[in-house]
Length: 333
Image (cartoon, rainbow, N blue to C red; front, side):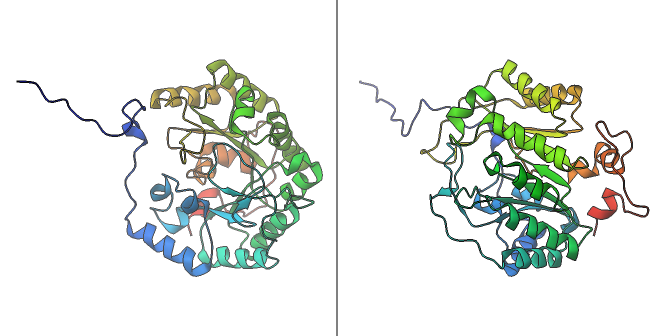
């Protein structure tokens, strides 16, 4: 009797998603409350639009400890990086002139302790949206000076005046992502987003406002080599970048570049130790870590306290006015 052949459906040659990259659907009461708050305030987050796997963790605890990443200046980018799911256009809609005030008011009413603001790239604007971004931060700080603000910016086409305008707006953390090592940048990012230009942005931000914490993020699994990661970390330390995060690249759709490899949790632990040994004040490293993953953990850390208080600051002293609450007090509302 002839044995029946087993039928297999789908792509049986593709690498299966490792178990450590799988997450459960968030269902906690805190998550649902924060989601409802955001809708009521008219705020839109990258967390939801990018389907971030960590949303349950970042929104799952007390509201004072929640971290959300607010998207400014629309949802349409003028660039087309091969890893990014954000829609693109050469002519995105014009800016909403009321957005800075409305966003600042909404965040102040929401009452979180730490907020991350980011934008799409707006190469269609003369200043890349720097004035709009800075205005939003200033208005929020005027309304709620206790809220800690991280700005995750684009490169403003390397314009130092634009970088300085945002850096001096009153924010606490200036973040700009390298995304990958120099050798892989042409294959990963839009041609207008160069490795050297991004390094320069981080350097200019620190020069414009030396008290700032500067931060960047690297995706792993896009074809990089270990020696290239080490070289990148050295370059970041040479310009006094304070914080680095590492996460696994995840392909958003079949139209985006493929995953070259899935990096193991042990390897992420290795890079965390390498970065810490090089002198970074804070490192977040893991398969599911994203640029803004639990961003407020930085300022809860002992390194964050030292940096803000100017005690043992590696590159400069940061003056804090008498009576200024420590990060834990600021973050627990």
